[in-house]
Image (tube, rainbow, N blue to C red; front, side, top):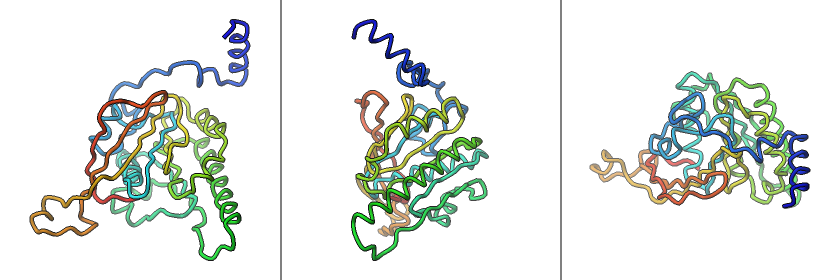
Length: 260
């Protein structure tokens, strides 16, 4: 690139306050420092992430249904409330189950739950269904932005796991840039949950999950019983950094039960 063109580009980035986001390498947080990292509560995953989910950054946990993405999210929210932090969940399709979350260790008194409209049956046409989903996602993004601007949350999550990928792909990438600008430098870890990668900040993470098997716990194995609620699921987690996929071996997590 010619020097004059590069200078003009850098000047434009500075004018729009994008120079730090796009051109400057952000420092890595000290390992295990909870001021900069939010533990997920799953030791194997936290070790793979260098201590936890980076604060002040946009990260995402993605995978198909039953891959463990919601299990990891609920564990992270539970770990945050156990530390005394306040957390928030933006739930555009009203999929959250407070009873299961409470049983999983989340202190509901420290959770702000923003509920959307549950999908109904008998919608007349596919175009209308997509229009309804798009409106639900738009409302969720506005709610996410308001929560992040308010500040004071340890972890803020947006659950887009059941939103159709074509709807998610219509979200402008500038939306995620604005989210990153709001939380940059804060102690809030913002987390997206979805079926495929959507967005992440330069120092954020994408963790791709898949459930490989379901095994009984040692107690149930002795009894030769394998109820779903007491099973132990094996989840593979692949960490994808902002600029390149890591080449190391996936980490295997054993969690019970696997949810979404």
